[in-house]
Image (cartoon, rainbow, N blue to C red; front, top):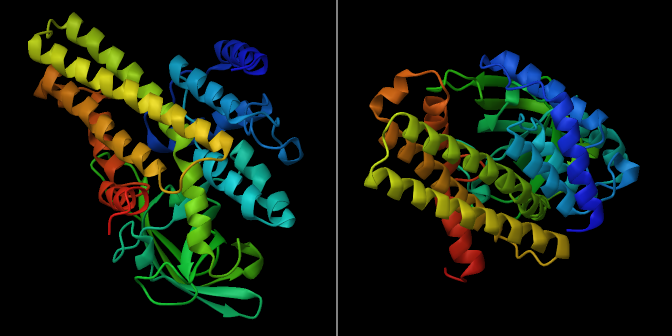
Length: 370
């Protein structure tokens, strides 16, 4: 890490100390509003898009700078970046594969969270298997007419745009014929139906498209190039996110150890569980840094970030299952975050591609198994 990154770390640390508003509210809508204001403040301070070119609102630094920001936010316990899907996945993909006019239109709102993004990949009959996408889009003049359904779309009701994968050619079961379109979520014909969850939050929704018209100008990477665009996006999706998440999980593990000591729950089984999770988190963090280094060097093997996602899900769930074992069943009756995180951990092996899909990618693309 060079002097620029060391200076940046000092800058970020000082700014957080002076500006961190504290934990966001627990009530869902209030939390979303607080997280949106938080990202806008980070953007105003010049910390969003650190690795983006200056002409697009960034600072033209390396991915190491993004890692520094993720580390400082996570280690300080500051709130998460609400628009990270746009900031770390679709912004870089757009800069790689988009048209200049698309960049001018979409990038600014990603940075300051004035335009939140969701991602429309999963479907009821396809799960996370992109080859199974059935949502159809027909070309009609200078528009696409979209009909179909997506499911498990995070924050769909809050989003301005949806990075939507549709089928413009071919049949379900094929990667050929997919197209990625940046669909405005306020378009006529879109219906959003939140899915009930144990957490009582409308985080996931199913989204219905009834002859929704989207300009062809919103297609990213060209018609029938959706598989290529999606693979590029997945390469960006997991590096910074996994690093940031691993550091936050380390904080939670430290809190668990302190709680176990305070409540005199430290026995041989508790020590073994904490030690196991600690070792796993060290390996997860190392894997995240490895991925970022390969991204920076341009040597990242397609499909390799499935390792990051799969291992994140396993470690995430192990940590909070271990917490429940150590703290006892009564922890589920307390409103101190452990129950929330235990329930949320079950979703980690589903969102952004199920663990089963990640294993298929690893076996097929990395190990050459068929």
